[in-house]
Image (cartoon, rainbow over all chains, first blue to last red):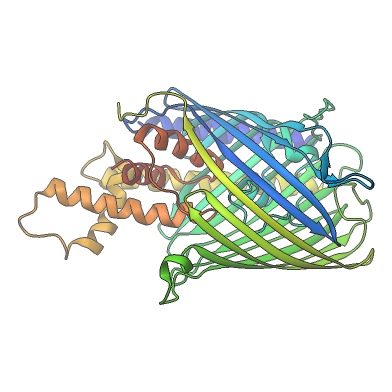
Length: 351
Length: 123
């Protein structure tokens, strides 16, 4: 309890000092007035796990409503279903469409160093949940095995968060997020009570980002979770390297992924520059207090994939994975077509 | 006790980094000839070094400055946006302004990067 008080008090003091400093500098935003947007992604994903097929259509609309010069309301929902083959019947049959508001948050950009967020927000533990989760962004359609660690039920928190990014040194930027989440048992809006933070250093010249996350539970076992992330895009190559490690009482593990765009191949350039090959290795170790959202047994997965970008936002993906687990080995095939859409909800001129 | 120590350390580091950034920003603003746009002004010298050879001697100073900022904006765009996803095509200015505000919060890009990227993406 004392730790939470220290966290809150320190956050308030930091907020006051930063707001004061920000007020002294010129923080006028640019003249272009933003328009509300309906954006998001849609996808049709087919999985074949151990020979069992399932079809997974998903649509994820995101609404952005800029308010004035410093406010932003954003909310994202998901509509999805799983369609499987039912014995004795032909074709694929789905259950009800699952509907969920993933987050609904109000952001106040207080100054160049800090944004205050309240509401329901994606838990900033690691990088995948916040930054790589949408189907049009991720290089491989399957979730990392360690994704559920540290992000709470429904992948989100309910409470408040302070975050920002700034140039801490001429050579690197720092980004940070500290948050508190309250307990919620409302269906589809559930969250756990915890506090935590994430910090990262980004070196633009090397296109390298490293960072770490920490979270302290404030209910049940009051356990801690921590993790590290790493992103690197070598400036000389069209290569993305990403990796994460996470550890908690529920389990631990890592994933490492490399994606190479074939734009350097000198022939059939129009086709190859749209093509990306991906490989990912990941491993998960069961913890002493296993959760339903995590695998029940130690698991290792190797995946290889191919992405083809038809145009901006429209991508076809296919990947093969081999899963080694104490509960049994399996092959996993995935094929997907994903699309990112942007629909302005107002005039789009420059006024 | 250990948990409290970790929390205090985390917040102390965060506060120290924030204050150092503020001090640096003030130093940049004080040394800049155009204090009205400190972020863009502080970014311009580095980009200018990279492009001054290509600028013709007859070009107007404003045009050179615009070109410098545009090139720097493109560089920041590729560096920041490409960390997570493929670089998108340009959208109309007001759409881009909303998207960049969203990315400022989500991807925690800096104020300076946001301004330069928006400038590049709306030209």
